[in-house]
Length: 508
Image (cartoon, rainbow, N blue to C red; front, top):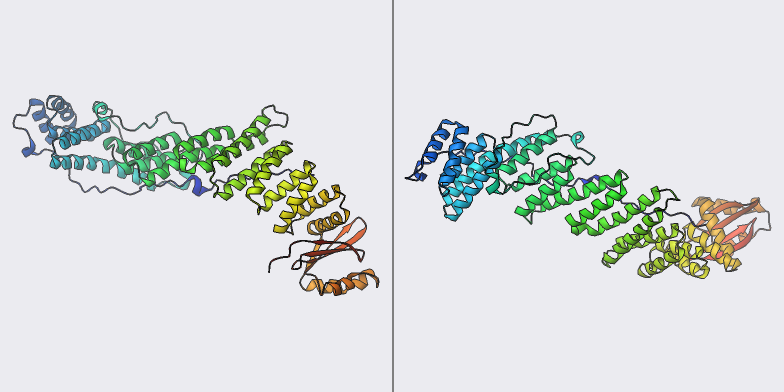
């Protein structure tokens, strides 16, 4: 007679799956571009460098880049070479080599402790960074809610972060203007280019990870967030983006009913977001259970999936601190439900005994324990825990139903009838309260004639009940009087006392 009980399922809210944080602000573009500084030019400059300066002044960028690359190899300590080379590469939209030139120049300037040249190099780098970054922000500001992609997307171009400057310096691939129709892809395109021209631009990684997640490119979102965190390990916004990307994929897979894939994704989320491990463990267990229930009853793998869910809840209990009461209580309950629905009542009883000892005030656990003990033929044990549950909620009809069944098995007929009357009255009875109670009680003579026992009870109990419920038991009329504040119920069948039941009085 036990009802099939469902596991509590994780709810995935919009806030939970889309709580990425991004910079979404324009960078100041008021920096002036520095080209040739005569005072910083070495007196014994080579032909390549001299030619490169001339081409820069003439804005013949391709020849400037070629001759300055020659100068870089000839004069690796000439800081002006890096400034002009980075500028020429940027104008040619060869952003990877541009970023590398600026980076190598800054490293060389720092080694020489030339703070003025460090500042000049950074200013030129930021000048080109702001162009790209602000194009990304402009595209992002035009994104609407309908532009976001709900499902996981594969990408032929995976984000791997900028290459090492020594490698990227020879990467002369030119990047044109974005020519697609998607604002999200446009934003991602320019934020990625921003990371090429300045591999240290933390804001660009924030926005890039955010946009990749909106596009459903979870791996790329995670990679972008990690690249940013490598630069700024304590950046809370990047950490939140990493967390959102990790759990976003798992939530999408769960929602799509791809439960085993969701299990793998939640396990990956634990790696990326260990602080939320308990939440992800709970969802792993639920995903196993949902996968099992979607399988046919005769599927040979179904039992293994249910066992996997039970083990997952056991691991959750093992890892959950004692003060995380809600998580532990839910894990106990769901693990016991899995065993019960498998017909493994003995295993369920063991789990519930531990659960009730840990949570003696949990009505849900006590109720499930009572039902499970009844199905295991432990009727005395069922009565004990069910009475504990009734003390917490005397108005729950299910508790009285299983008390009635258990007491009946123990041949305690008087108590059994009383609990049956409580169960039927609470589950099927028509309720009368307030002014209706007096009207109903005062009309007893009309219903039953002069020999009924209601008036006597009224005198004995010292007043009207708090509530009356009436129902039919076969062809017999039963009415139950509830004195909630006294902790007492009296049931009448055709006007005669049928049973009396006591319970903890309601708290005033």
